[in-house]
Length: 244
Image (tube, rainbow, N blue to C red; front, top):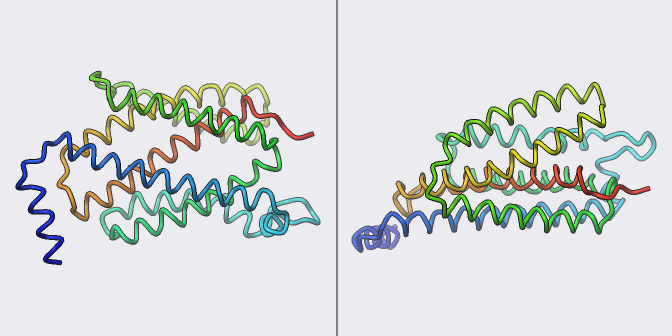
């Protein structure tokens, strides 16, 4: 405890600039995001390429989802809500544990794409998504333009897309699905830049080494993780090669 207090005090006494604190915070955010993506990718690959694991998610006789399959499909929403609304009550350790478990469950959920798309197209779209995400993240971090207004517009558009997607679950329109995917790519590329800038600004006002900073780095990682995953899935729906 004494060593931690000393380190934090030493950091503050050196007059570290807000820019340095922000860079440290963003490094933590991207590190946790990368860890979560790695866990999800590995879990998705393991389940998607081994039918003995996939049998836990799919009823092999009927072809429909098993009980665990339904849990895996809908549990991520619950985890996001729990982490978001439980931010003040949960410790940074609990929040981190939830985030890592969430990454595993998301990986299990994403494993279904291996049944619908070829391995080559999944890998190709993944790296394309990573390139687009990286460019937009860099833009959001380096631009001097305030993206707040753009972010507000994109958030309203996101709500519209969610509503349209729910409606299309019943309509099952391929044309509408195609339009939703195109708009989703636009929304999540824009949100990537906006969220990175927002997190950079938040980081500049934080105190290094505190519990609040640790928790905000996890929530920030969750935000960027969701931007990337949604961008990846939208691009996969547009350009992924489906299995015969």
